[in-house]
Length: 288
Image (cartoon, rainbow, N blue to C red; front, side, top):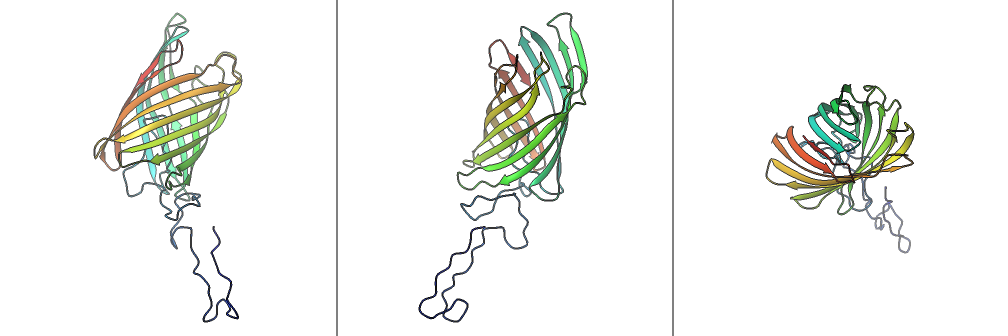
């Protein structure tokens, strides 16, 4: 809270008495009796906008890698689901993976800026290299998280959210990390014009080396450009990459993808995307 400005009394005039020179106090918070929609506010500006899109179309974390920098709002349950096909042409790991369901539950509790998150990801994988072909199916490790709506956008100061998150080792033995892995995801975005919005994601997560089973820290960085193509149609293009630190065999990976969204109603969205890996021998493509 910024302290109110004031002037010293002139001559023998006293503040609070007739003829005094006290200036009115200025409030830098939301209007009286209106709850905060974000945990903090930029000290620049006094609009106190932002927060959950209660009166607008829903904002989803899918289909791009960069998740929404808003929460769903107190008392709101939002369910997101999808199907992904992944083909991996790595000479050491030639595989096809289907993931149907990919359910993410998002529920706002206590305040508009607080969201609980739970993700369940079924999969079916067929791996032909090394031979013979092996097929696995089941559930990946359970995802748990909390999203905190930090700030609204104020000019060029971004809208921001923070997601402490983790996976717990509940998955199929072929894919489970066998360890609880924690991390944090910093989300930020700007509405540039009515046509274009830019979003970013910076994550630091614990991960497990696939060959040595040792823990390491993985930095994931992403940027996405979103477009309003029509009243109910949107699109995006995106880059994201994974940068391991302390891993014995894991290497840097780069990806690009693009997609379209369609909202027939304010509370319903359908989307499709496609992408490809760019790193070395790892030619990895997916569709959804």
